Length: 334
Image 1: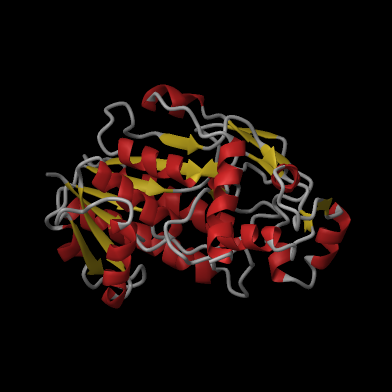
Image 2: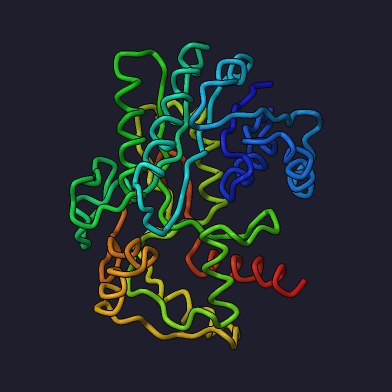
């Protein structure tokens, strides 16, 4: 049985990847920052698949060398999902950039030293936004200009981490595949609603968030993201490719609330925040500043290559939104 080192296993995407890997017959070694979480994570995963002794954990830190070589020593693949994410703009952008870049390089260096043939890296559509001006047709060859006016620390962290990965594998026999979701939604496998995706839906469903940002981008179902991560491990055509894993067309944030309202979620507000107000508040509010790359803009990603190579059809926007709402509501009403 082939074993995968899965970094960031405790995260929203990481948990889904762990379940999908086990379902597809892989053994999983999940990295966490503290092994005290291991039993809780095992319990969560066992609700969806029986590990049958093929699940273990190791302790790794994106900013420390300790443990990386031992972690990959008995693995066949590395799936590097772990990366810091905050929509708010930090006072020091290196709070995001440093762990993203250094963690990626630690994973790749350890994998290369261990003779691992392929690494699958979680990147993002935010590494593909060009000059961050919107109205871009995003393809596999698109890159975010990290010197663009509205390139936030998060955009820079994902772009620079991915670029460092491609640079590292140049001239080496090790293979690299990068996965690029848009904003990721879909059901959570844990009761943790503190992450960015779940917090957004929690605020929408409780009526706390009455206005949505006027922005459109391809959105991603977490189940699709996990599925393509796993398929990318051994697909012969995937090596050296950057795959957008998202809806076939861009969707708007107000479209989320409009759909939920039409489906009977009575507390949902359907207002749209004026663009000028977001831009004004960005001068004083780090969360609003983090929205500047998107406000009033539309980014359209091309998923045709992902569909063709993996024989995959994206989950619909409607199913993604409604399944997320059902999942979050279940915890809110528990």
